[in-house]
Length: 238
Image (tube, rainbow, N blue to C red):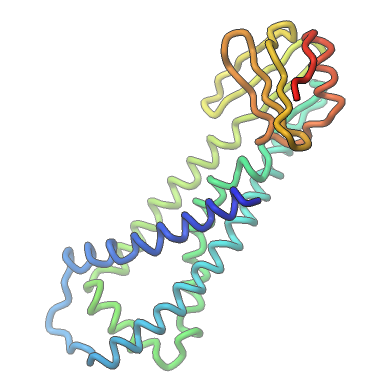
């Protein structure tokens, strides 16, 4: 949980840091001309209103990130469900948090756009004038392009993330990675099984040097680890 909160905090801080940089770039690309400038008091007031919008965005981003991480984990388990294998392990919430966070940060812009007029009320038109002054005349079109690019990247990242899964039968383990590459191991190829200190979290090492960390997989039950230990001939190292 701490790892997830840390990742979320870092992402929000990154957005807060990059936003002024993007705004400066937009102003340089399409500076506002022939526009009556706001007074110093109006600018200060608009900055406070903008902070309100930023807080709303962070709220939506947090909610969406958590929701999509859980939803992606659920969809992945449904997609890879199969009665042909003894066990099917799919990425859990923790594994999907990074791609879910990317999708959440992107789609959080939609509700923010829809409610900004309600949040600002009678100050909405003044805020639009302020945005034109600090970001340039074509900032809205640029934001739409950036949103489309982020959405495409998010979909691609999540599509690849959902490919990872592990099929386990009585005598072999089949691992499918993000690039849809399959590696199949006989149980005897397991060189060690280390318990990582939490329920369902094990580090399984193979003779070719590759490893499988079950911390990012769900449905890892004790019976499964007992099967791997029995078939491989290696006891679980604690």
